[in-house]
Amino acid sequence: MGVNATLADLKVTDKPVVLVFNKMDQFVPKEEWAPEYDEEGDEPIAVAMRRKTALQYLKKTYLTKKADNVVFISAQTRENFTELRELVYKLVRELHVKIYPNWLDIPLTDYVEEGDGFGLDMPAENPVTA
Image 1 (cartoon, one colour):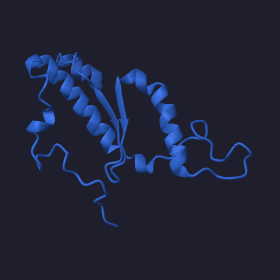
Image 2 (cartoon, helix red, strand yellow; image 1 turned 90 degrees about the horizontal axis):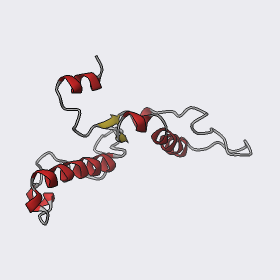
Image 3 (cartoon, rainbow, N blue to C red; image 1 turned 90 degrees about the vertical axis):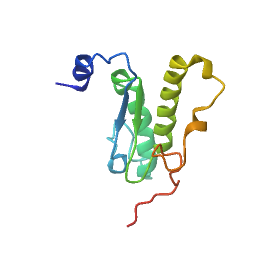
């Protein structure tokens, strides 16, 4: 049974879905997604640049048909955590506005305390030590 079947059984298919791919720090792009060498074939292209090109390709292809919201992250290096956090905030805010339309002038961040686990107090640098 897949995720979508489980959501259907729970009768929550009307809720937003975020498709999150982890382990992006270990992702090695395929040649067709991002070439290994420049157009002349002389200079190798850095893996980080290839990864960025491949992610753009993947986001434009079948993955966007699987879910409206697709994010590629690395939990270890915190790559794209800001993108994920902003997406979740946007989705929660949209739901908040539907439920509490009279609270439109009050930002959600007014109710978030430091250290509450929502990630607003997370350090920007990588906390993982080698």
